[in-house]
Length: 266
Ligand code: GLP
Image (tube, rainbow, N blue to C red; front, side, top):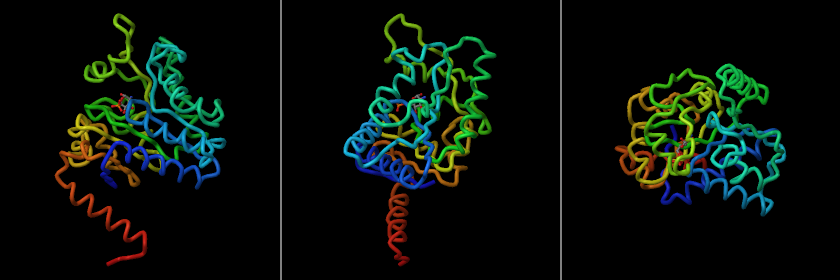
């Protein structure tokens, strides 16, 4: 794992935006894996700004989102499709049909299973994901892979944990139906991405971040599966990094990595 610790949440967003633009510049038909949640909003804002100032085009980009709530329409105010359209897709030149968010409106298990299989097949057909953006839940979940999710899991129906339902309650009106199920890429699907970049900011994420980086490889912390990925970058602000035991070491590694990049091996 490459652990990058930056002064602020804004620096985390800028760093992530640079990584996304690097992939778009390097590939003829880049494939991005995208995430929802409050953490990547600043990244998407930055990408929209760079698009508007003509620093990047998404014309040839295909995207796959991690997850979607089951049982609400795409057009629902709180669907992840609506979130992505609002924060990114409607403001850039990506071709709408090249944006994928799991189709999860159905309440029928057979239809949802087929939708999950089709999603995996679409990722394969696109040539796999070049860069998967991730956030992290308070309990260490990635996508909607809650604790005890198999590290080999693929896109499937997942029951949300109580902690996740409570954390997301603020987005739903009083008395409004709040989904307790989601269709999510599996941990195996995420690990197949050629590179992953997990963003975490704020003190509330510090425990989960510590478990992910320095804890044991454990299904109790789904994000710890990223320890198995050859090209995983974890980009943190100071608060999210505050409980790491080896914080100074990661900063030292980063200095050394930059020196090596400049050809200096001293
Ligand atoms: C949801 C999403 C995750 C996201 C998490 C944390 O559960 N399914 O992909 O990482 O929320 O969101 P936030 O960035 O708002 O803390």
